[in-house]
Image (cartoon, rainbow, N blue to C red; front, top):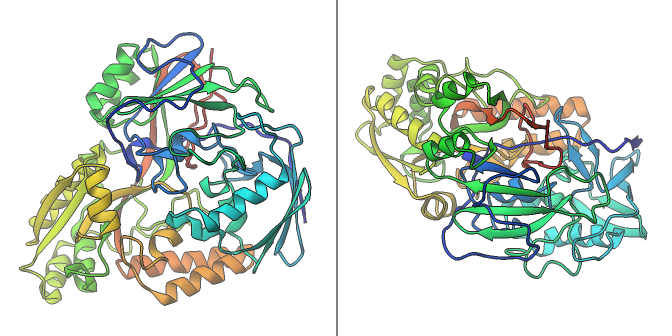
Amino acid sequence: MRIQFKKAAVVLAVVGSVLLTSCSAGASSDGGGGGGGGNGQPGSDQVSIGLAAEPASLDFTKTDGAAIPQVLLYNVYETLVKENQQGQLVPDLAKSWTISKDRKTYVFNLVPNAKFTNGKPFTAADAKFSIDRVKTDWTISLKSAMDVVKSTQVLSPTKLKVTLTRPSNDWLYRMSTRIGAMFSRTGVNKLATDPIGTGPYKFGKWVRGDSITLVRNDGYWGQKPYFKTVVFKYFKDPTALNDALLSGTINVIGTVQSPESLGQFKNNPKYNVIEGTTNGEVVLSFNNGSGPMTSKKLRQAVRYGINHKALVDTCWGGYGKLIGSMVPPTDPWYQDLTGMYPYDPAKAKQLLKESGHANDTIRLRIPTLPYAESCGTVVKSQLEQLGFHIKLDQLEFPAAWLTTVFTNADYDMSIVAHVEPRDLGAVFGDPNYYLRYNNPKLRELLQKADEGTKQQQITYMEQAARMISQDAAADFLFLLPNLMVADKDITGLPKNAISESFDVSQLGRA
């Protein structure tokens, strides 16, 4: 089949408060490029966006977490294809592509005039280099999505052939995410501090603990963005983030950290409040590999013991959608599974007793992020009322939480929002992931879904989501809303946030 589109310019955002990422403080890291810092008042040529979670590094090939692609993907690094607000794949550096009848061979026709910010032209050789490099040089878990690639071949400077080992419904979609980022063959030596891409913006500077500045790429091959400078400013305190908008220090709250504060903006004609959806599932994670949560009855007791509606009303101002699974409504295989574990205190108490862990202390170890801290106290309170013994530990985010929970799995329960798109397989299909969920039957379903027809993909993914929920591999507290506030004259902001990227290329001023 042949897929041909016109270049589509869309704005995609990701909820920055909930990112599995890192923040750090320290000395400035200047990657060159200039363009102003993050401390001045916004001007007509600058827009400043307030977020919560700062990256630990700018190299998403070796550092897990979504805060890096939030800033760099689609802005600095481009992909062959990208995802629009409707979840469709549209052209980026590939203006068109063909897929063979056996669904194993892709031929991409690349744009002819793209250049990296180091002055080198973007060619099929760079695309081959970037795809091959995921297997050889990347270290993060998401790299496994490229394992299906058998070979890459340069057919001409603007034509690339990719052959898969088997049909894969997922592979082309993953090419719109961070693993599809296109790198310069001569620009990967300092990815942690000096990213080089083909995008509408280039890296300006990073003041650790404060801000990251992007500068308009005047040599960009596509439509030039409106703002010369974009500043991402980071705030650990929700009140400080709100005050920054009220004082004019920033123009946009990219992630509302305290939904109860929205009233002050909704009633003010100076601001525009955006309410939409995301694919960020706030997950009450269970350690399925060791400790008391290896007991299915105990996991089920927790699921029955949480009043999800009351939790959302209490800890997130009533915003957010109850979904009951690891699938958001924007995915084709969404099902409402909230009825699988309805709030049932009596059943929770009985299962707790039957589990043999009624007297055990369960360690709920959460990151110091606003949503986790707020919802963690509610989870603790609700479960303790039913006889659970919960020890709540707040771990400094990112360093302590990433090391203790994410890397070492030294926890019983945690709370974190997973915002990577279509991440059911990544979270539950890898037994080495921090949930340590090991289910061969699930992995078999995931492979069938990937190799089958589009309808088979939906059917098998629905079965996979039900299997995970029935097994109580985790509890799904709610789906994060996309809540943003901006100066009234800022245009181009999205309603929904379903990608890893906060694409600023379409922002403007009325």
